[in-house]
Image 1 (tube, rainbow, N blue to C red):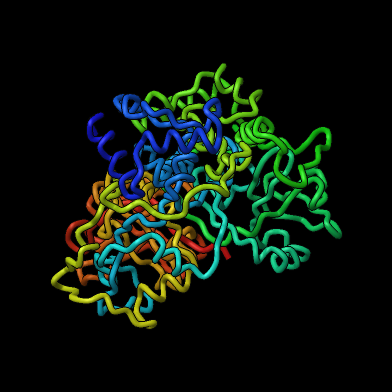
Image 2 (image 1 turned 45 degrees about the vertical axis):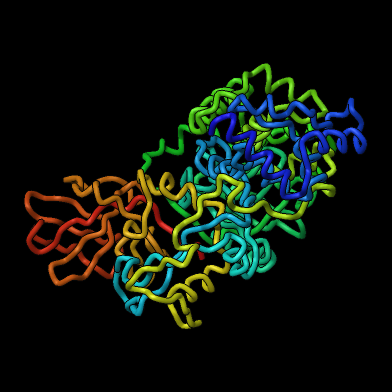
Length: 531
């Protein structure tokens, strides 16, 4: 967008309240003082000539307060897309397990959505999701958020989290159910291998099974480390955030063996976790960096990746700059730097502002019109429908309604990172297969699985299957009779051999490749329950 367009957009936004920039400047001086950081200069139009310019968070709060338009809409109007914070948090490579920001900052955004077809998922087979869903009219994010019955937390498994493996692997996105904690703890008293918990302790976060030692006393449990684990007191040494009940598991990477990692720091001198959040912004940032397991140099290198992903060098932060932020009581001047800190340290943007002691209660409440924001407006939002689906009537019995009811929440914060999580350049409905009807899956990772993403360009299985099951590639296979299989397969000369897991009810099946069966593609990610 040119500087002239940016200035014109600012004029149009102010015109919705019958205001001018000069009037805004005068009001900000009266309310906050001309020497305040909240003061909005009358020459702001000159500043917007720089395409990377964004007013300070203080000035944006003043604009939001005076115009009564939402703070996050003002950020978007100046080109700061806060939805990139949860997106890049879920994609950045992490050494430590991290709690993710699952906020949806633009609740008025248009989200591509689906409509149920007449088909129903078969009782026991794999099928393309297109058999049951088609592209429907786009919906506002606030409409989809209203479908959620309750809220969950989400985390990303770090590469150094020994307690998570197996069955969790690095880069998995896990869903955390806080409400099921008490019931799962009772079950853990008799069976330590029953469920995984998401735990915060003095060294950070971890996904771990638990041994309940006594009242409010637990031990982290890993089959690979049966001895020498410290005892933690709940509320003093550790906080149980919830039970891990689901996972989005990427299958594209090859992770190093567990023995090469040093694990997470829970040994040594006992340190108490804070009863609440740190008392100042500097403490908050330092705690976030320690929990992320980053040195200043490592955090700076990661910020360079963020700057490259967003094509804006302002998001880069030098090691000395990151060090300075942990000595200041005020937030950084540049909004881009605030976003970088949130992405690096797993911080919610709104929580960052709250810890900065900013007057969030004074921000505006009204959304800006779509025409004044860089908000994509899908054609379906205007009533253009697929000819094959002339209406969007959905009964409680249809597939989409049942699916949403079963999962209880629509994780909209992941909608922009699905392609990268699935290992695809672009993500579409045709890349997803339903596997929820398989009662006896052919691979252990497909137990309690619901959906898998498929890379249709990866169609050549290896000639050997000697790897451990959690590193074996999984494929979707189409049989000549139209049925689908999902499991590990190898190519032996011209024979396609589909293997079953050890102890499974299926024996290996052989097909003539390209004649009796063919490979549709390799599974890139799995959505499954952890029960």
